[in-house]
Image 1: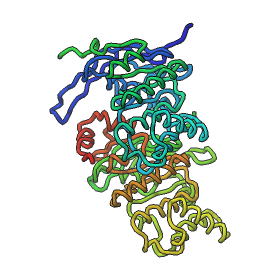
Image 2: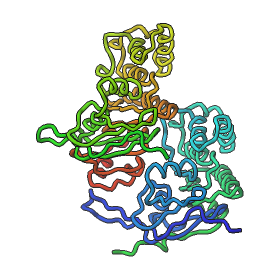
Image 3: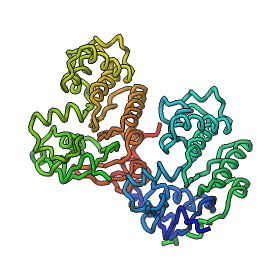
Image 4: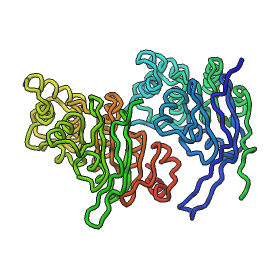
Length: 235
Length: 257
């Protein structure tokens, strides 16, 4: 098989300059290189503050990349997220990469089922398919049906997180970025998420994830990339 | 790929010694929502006026791609052509609804007027279309014959939206459309705008000082200070990883609810 990586980071470095703190520089990561193949779940390892979340955000285009390349495959094309125009990055987010954080950004007044189905439509599912998948994901993640019409703003942290996971998993995107998707879930729901991840992998989705829960990490990881290897050297 | 819907090159405008906009260039594509943020006096409303042909630039040009595909420089349009453009292909939602509505005429008349301006004459059709739009912006049809003078602030803004969108414009300018409203009214209005923008595939340039509004509605963002654009990028990137000292100050000054 001569599959090609879906993501390839080459020499990625990131520093925050805090102008409100007298221009203090915060070196996050230095010279990060790794790649992810289709069907692989690469887990970023290392203690808090090692730069794992920042790396995911750089791949998603949420954080800027100071140096290096962040190549994401879109069909035949390799797009460097570090240099791409905003419109190109938005197209990648629609067609190629999904991102699940711990926190749901709530949209006022939109019901839970619609919030999830909208994520499917934005990535190309038709209305019927999007709603069907939204229903089955919400059921699988144990979000009670009586809550589906309500906006998730008032839900508990764990419920909001499960709505967020449903949003992230609804589409058939080739690349998923997962930032602690199981952080505030109980064991039963953690198991659901592990199963969803395994299903995505079996269908060839490339996944980059951060999991603090050791059990989850061991079950889903194809490989672990230790981010402390790339710690910026003290200036 | 087709070119941008609107392209501005080196726009400049001064009022006396004050430079309101200094050499501003931007591209806007179909379906794209661009937020222009900055504090009062940063030049963002002047920029909107220049782009919408309401203020004449000292230098620079604005090019727009018409429905027939032709790209024209806007200062070259005759007054009649400009009027057709602003009444059909463009919309303008203003912070002060009394500037964007005709206060003496009824709600239905405010929506119908735009249809008559593009040549519709059949009273029944106009009223039916106006009713449709009032329903879409959640205004009770019993109020169709009332003057917007009797409307609340939120209703007036929703009426402005109906009046502007009834002609199916491709580009809508918005100047602080939700400022000065109660928070709950604001949330409802934002949700309405968000839904219509994505449903109709509108291109929007929205001026706001409210970063939360920009985050909710826009794809891209421009930060202005002292008449200059100091930072641009994807909206979430500018807000989550601001680079310029001033942008960092703006972002860190937002009170978390």
